[in-house]
Amino acid sequence: MNPELVERVFAPTAPYLVGREKVRDFARAVFATDPQHTDPEAARALGYADVVAPPTFAMVIQDLTLQQLLAQPDSGIVLERTVHAEQRFRYTRPIVAGDELTATLTVTGVRAFGKGAMVTSEADITDADGAHVVTAISVLLVGGDDA
Image (cartoon, rainbow, N blue to C red; front, side, top):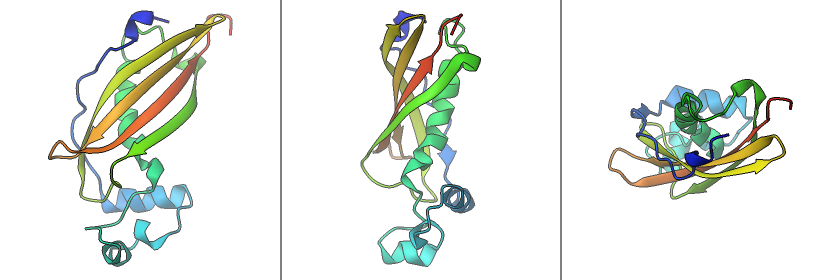
């Protein structure tokens, strides 16, 4: 693992347009049955412009940033020896269909243990106006050569 990853900030991702059908599909996949996730009228009754994504939908956008990290030749991260160990979210507001979101990843920690390491990163996800929507915090557990 490359300890120099700490505090590395990656370029913002291309904008991701959150689609109504993507939200509906994701809600079905994670068994989020509240009507606000699938019915635009139910979401509007709650004050939203369109269907509301389940909280874990932010992983769809965060994944774009994690792909940037995994593509770094100097990261020392080998996908075959990597497990997604932890996930957290800090929301300012829910993700809603029609949002155009951009994410910027920062590696916030690399902690060695044995022959492996834990890599912590934060993806700050903002809307088209640059307003914060959610920060997705991820911990990757990376095994060593003999792990």
